[in-house]
Image (cartoon, helix red, strand yellow):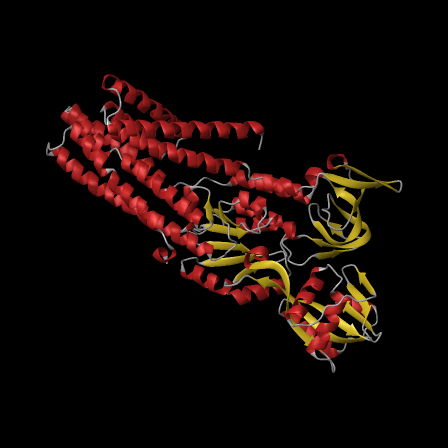
Amino acid sequence: MNNNGYLDFKKAIRFEITLVVLFITTFALYLLGLLPAILQVEILSIVGFIGLLPVAKSALDSLRNKRINVDLLATIALFLSLISAEWGSMLFINIMLAGARVLDLYTKRRIRTSLEGLTKLKPSRARVRKDDETTEIPLADVKAGDIVVVNLGEQIPVDGIVIEGTATVNQASLTGESVPVLHEVGSYVLSATVVVSGNIVVQAKHIGLETTFEKMINLVEESGDAKTRMKTLAEKFASWYIGIMLVVAFTLYLITRDTMLVLAVVLVVCADDIAIAVPMAYIIAIGTAARHGIVIKSADFLELASKITTLIVDKTGTLTLGNLSVTNVRTFGTHDTRHVLELSGIICARSNHPVSKAIVEYAKEKSCSCISPDNFEEIEGRGIISTDTNGNEIIIGRYEFLYERGIKIGNNVNNAINEEISKGNNITLLALDNEVIGLFAFADEMRAGMVESITALKQSGIKEIIMLTGDNDGVAKNIAKRLGIDKYYSKLLPEHKVFVLKDYLGKNGRTVAMVGDGVNDAAVLTRADVGIAMGGVGSDAAIESADIVLMQDNFEKIIELRGISKKVSDVVRGNFVIWGVVNAVGLYLVFTHVLNPAGAAAYNFFTDFIPIANSLRLFRYSKNTIQ
């Protein structure tokens, strides 16, 4: 976002707030009879003309784009109120419309900054090694083929090949994998991922716009261009109603040649109440949702939320917490579970690896001591070697690590390993004195209440729930089975998720929502009919790219979102019913000569409050009212 764009938004918001203050002040003075009588008409006319200008401009811009929006209805209502000197109605409409424009500017500004979250993750400098000397230089100066040094806790600044060292890298921001990945010599690493343990030296292969990270940014930009703007019910109504109303008025004039009758009819049916009440309903609903931790960026996405038929969900950080936890401990030989936990807790106490942290936490929960050992050797990404109090060698780590060190792995251990892998779990083994005595099974921790939430979403009318993940097929299958998700896609990179989404968008009458949290979800969140971000742990990119943000990281909020959407849709439909009945009564009174133009304007003004009052019912929202 450039500075000029930011300043334009500030000026526009200040201008609209100034208009709101002007209209409220004038309205109060008019009601209290404090306007000078000799200048009252001039003052009210000027204020009315000022209020008409931005609304008329929006209507004209819409017509130039071959669209008819609610502002065209509002323009007619304001113009007729102005020429018929219905000052109260004119000022009231202006207050509501100016307030709506302030909200609209705010949401547009948030959308304009959708890429800021991505750029925050981008490294700005890199340490390049040349002739045995390491120099820190700006990232823009790094060239393909340069040797880049990356230490513990740092972001990898380029896409490239590891030529020295080993490191465990957290790739969740790009690939969605819940478990940090071990990278050794020959491995390919991605920019903007983080080294969580170890140190590596990388030969740059792709830099700048060629990196996976920069391609993600391009995906978000392209996805934004690809999305077609949806229309709310009010906009659809406006697109046909205006034409019909003008044709009817013109035909009536040709038949009767009675200008006053035509003016009275137009004042009754000008739909300024709908032009106010419908946007008001959406504004109140959006504000109510925000108070309940749901940020909705525009009314069209709020309306679509109740129409979602297909929910595509990213696994890591959305269905799961993205944290490893011990799901099962198995023991072998004569060793019991407590002994295995005490040995593993001791050997893992000094390690920062996510697996070690999960084991230590589990051991502490079982009241086992986790005292740091005197001798300790960690082989990065593979395992740890130490000794117990009797001097016997303890090894904990991956299957391959124990096998390489000649540890005996019997059939009973292999069978246990295969059984846990079939469940989609990750495996770590514990060996004492050259024999495997324990097995730890790990899984990404499921969010609480997920099974109930998935069931409730299906009951609410969502026909299919699809899971996307960068994890292996075993993990994906296990999670899908536990949650009752019938379809899933595993081992996905960010661009693959976009391709999967394309297979569902615009087909068989689907309305597709995407739920995600990470940078790897930004493109699909932007491309989906409705993008929903889990905000609390989600990246700025996902939050800014999404159309709706669940601020409390509570998946159940999607159910509440759909409830609010259905509630506001019911209120809006109710407003149209009220509008139809009121217009029918008003037209009867006009054609029976009970109402002249002045009476029609007064009738229109007072009946305006009926649909508005109906919209105000949304302030009484509570969870129980929409279940």
